[in-house]
Image (cartoon, rainbow, N blue to C red):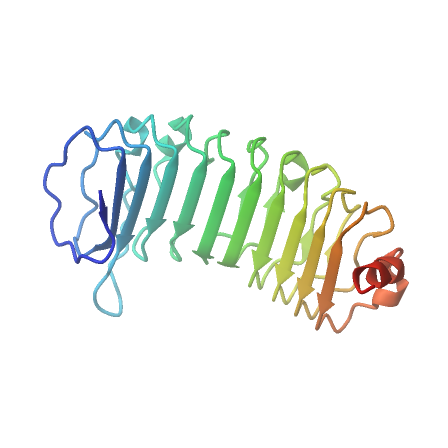
Length: 254
C-alpha cells in the first residue's frame, strides 16, 4: 500500500497481510499503532507537523517496532521524534535504514544485518558507533552535527561512503580496512582537517569538494586503476605534495 501524496489524518486498522506500507503525509498527533502488521517488509512513515514549533515526542518511537521481525527496509521522516526504541536492534532482517529526524538525540545500536544506512538532518547527535555493522555496504550522512564516527575501520564490506554538510567533523578515521570501497564522496565538511591512514586500493572514485579546512590526504599511489579523482575548492590542501596525486590526475584526464 502506497499513499505518497494523500494527506492522512487517521490510520484505521490495516490488514495483517500487508508487505509494503508507505505513508508520507501523516497529519496525526501520534504515531499510528502498526504492531499487528507482522508481515511488513518495507515501511516508510513521514510526518507533516503543523506550526512553527511542533511538540517533541519524548517516548521512544516507534514503540512497536520490535514486533515487525520481518522488516527489511525502514524510513522515518519526522521533526518531532527525539528518541528511537532500542528494540530496533531486534530487527535481524533489516537491511536498509533511512532517518530524516533533525531533533533525534539518540540512535540506539542498529541491527548488524544493515547493508545501507542513511542519516539526514541528524543535528542533535555528535557521535555514532558503527562497529557492529559488519555487513554495511553503503553509508550516507547529510546535514549532521556528527563530530566523531566510530567503527569505520570495522566496515570491511563498505563500498560507498558519502559525507555531505558535516560541519563539525574534524578527522575521518583510517579507511584502509574497507578493502571493497569504490566511491568516497566528501563535500562541504568545513571543519575536516585530515583523512587518516591509507586509502584502500579498490577506490575508483574520490570526490572532495569545498572542504575548506582540509590539509592532509593519504597516499594515493597505491590505488589500482582506473579511478577518477576530483578535488575542488579545498583551499588549504596542497595537492602537489600528495604522493600519487600527479600521476593519477594525469591518467584521469588523458
